[in-house]
Length: 289
Image (tube, rainbow, N blue to C red; front, side, top):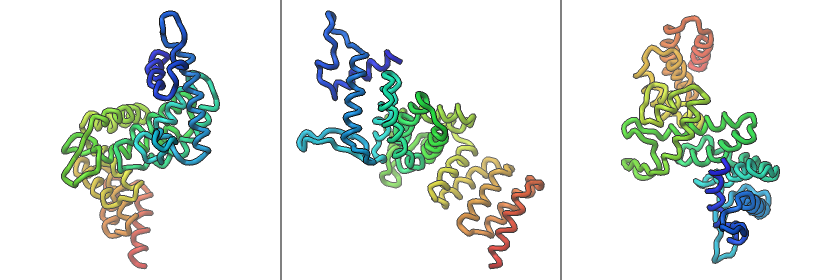
């Protein structure tokens, strides 16, 4: 870890004076501990400049002579809290950890962001480091939700995650997408669901469409969810869980006739599941009202 942080210390030269970063040694080598200490002070200075707002540090405007900040939706929003946890890990300064935890609360809504491929940077750099250095309940769930949002942008035809939302027929994929794979590999490991791993490799199955449907339901993209659960059923037509989920999605949008058809199919696959009978009964009541 300390060797990798040396690289980070060099990056921090953008923020620190050369005199502070480079220790006065006979060979001119980097004093890593001093560099990290200075970096920690600089990050606490940025914390003070934010004044407890919901903004994230972005850059410094030399013309206006003031910092420029962003919302949590900026693609680099995870870098500031992620670096805070790196610095906390190396220095033990609890102020850095506290500021990182504050920023995570602001970043939390991005777990359901399906409009960008950058969710991998936003969540794994931040929550990933937090979960490693100072884990708390809920961190894993947030990252798994983020991974589900990320795979909603995967195309089985292209075999890649879509980077940018451009024209309908323009499927832009940039090298930055490689940084997202780490989140998918992590999600596969902690959940035991190889769908994340398969998508990272460019392969898909029924479970992929089910996972993407789950993300779409979270974002209230119900027609897309119905389309994907139908694709999953095409691949696994005898799956009780998929037919039950199809019925559930149709119920969400008051398509009770379609829901009953799906639920009746689920009932034939597992006639002992009592929840299916309750769902069918609910749909029948709604059709009579």
